[in-house]
Image (cartoon, rainbow over all chains, first blue to last red):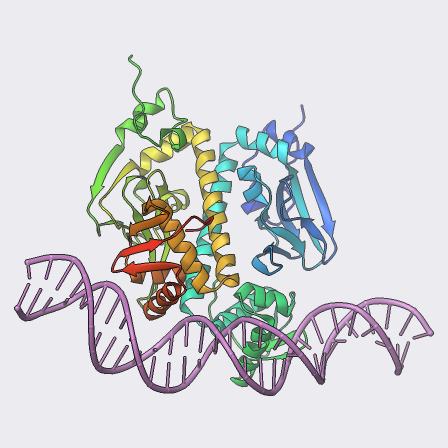
Length: 230
Length: 230
DNA sequence: CGTGAAGTTGATGTATCTCAATTGTCGTGG
DNA sequence: CCACGACAATTGAGATACATCAACTTCACG
C-alpha cells in the first residue's frame, strides 16, 4: 500500500507538532479523524462544561482560554497562538472542559477527534510523552504567573503583558513598536485579575510615565526589554 | 523465575499509585532503583535549580513545594500529602527543578531514580498516561488558584485555606475542630501571596468575626463548609 | 533564664474596589 | 457621509484593603 501523507506535514509548525511522531499505519487513523475548522472572531470553539471532543491545535489566529465563575466574573487564563495545543486537559482527564476557548481573531484550528486521538496515543507512546511534557510546560507557566502576581505590582505586570503582546502583534519602525490590541481592555483586566476601571488607571499611569502611548486599540511603545509570557 | 513483589504493594496508597500498572519484568527494574528516605522536619528533599534525580512519592508527613524569587521573596505553591507525587515536572521535562521541596513534618518519601523511571515509562505506557493525568490535574488546581485569587477576598481565601488544613490536620470534638498548624504564618502568607503582617491582621479579623480562635499554632473552628484548594 | 526567631501591633502611604456618571468607539441604517 | 444606538472605556469620589517600616511581644529552646 502507498505511503500515506502526514496530515501535519505541510504545517509550518510540523517540527514541534504533537503528532509528528505518528508513523506507519497510525497515520491513516490520524488522517481519518483529522479536520480543520475556521472560526470567525468571537466564535467559541468549545464551551466551559462541555465534554471533550478531541485535541485542538491552533493553526492561525488567536484563541482565548477563559473561565467563568458562577457569579459572572471571568478570568483569562491563557492566549493560544498558532502552533499551540488547546483542549488537551479535558482530553487527558476525560472530564468536561473547565474553560472556554474563544477566537479573538479570525482563526483556524486543526482537530483530532477524541476517540481516534486516544487510539493514536495508545499506539504511539512518543505522542503521549509529548502531551505530558506540554502539560508540564503549561504547569510551569501557571506557577510563574502565581509567583508573578504575588511579587510584582500590577503596573509592572501590565507593562510586561503589553510587551509580550507587542512581541506577537507589533510592527517596529524607527525604534517605535506599534500594534492594534487583539483583546479588549476587559480581557487585559481579566488577565491581570483586576477590575476594568483599575486597568484603565494603570494604563494612564504607564502613559504618564512615558512608557507607552495609546489611542483606542492602538498602542505604541519603545524598544525591547526581555519578556516572559502571560 | 519467581514472581517479584511490587515495591508499592504494601503501601496504603497502592490503589492510586503511579507505579501500580507496572508488571512483569519491569517490576524488577522498578525494585532496583526504588528507595525510601526519611526526612526530618525542615529537611530539603530537593533544591530549586537542581537537576531531577527521579520521581518522588510522599509516603508520610507533609512536604512544601516552594519557589524563591531572585529578590528573596518566596511563594508556597503547593502542600504535598501522603500518596501524592512530587518532582515529576522536572523529571518529565528533563529540566532543573524550579521549586524546592521541604519537609514540614517528619516525613518519608519513596523515590524511583531518574534513569530507571525513564525506562519503566518507556516500557509501561499506562504509567506515562497516569503521569500525564497527574499533570493535568495539577494544572486544574493551578487554574483554580489563579481564579480564586482574582475573585475572592484574601480574608475568604484564608478562611478556605484554614478549612482545608483543618480537614487534613484537625480533630473534631463536640462540633469544634482543633488542629496544630503544620506550617508557619509566613508560609500561610506565602500561600495567599500577602505579607506576614497582613496575614496576622486577616487572622485577627476572622477571630473578631467569630469564625475561629487561635493561640500560637493551635487553631479552633466550628463546623464543616465545603472546600477546594491547596 | 537569656536569646534569637516568629509573630504582632501601630502609623502612614499607596493601591484597589465600588458605584455612578460620562465619554468614546464602532458598526449600522438612513 | 453622517446620525444614531449599543457597548466599551474612562473618570470621579469615597471606602476598603494592603504594603511598608519600625517597635514591640511572644514563643521555643538551649
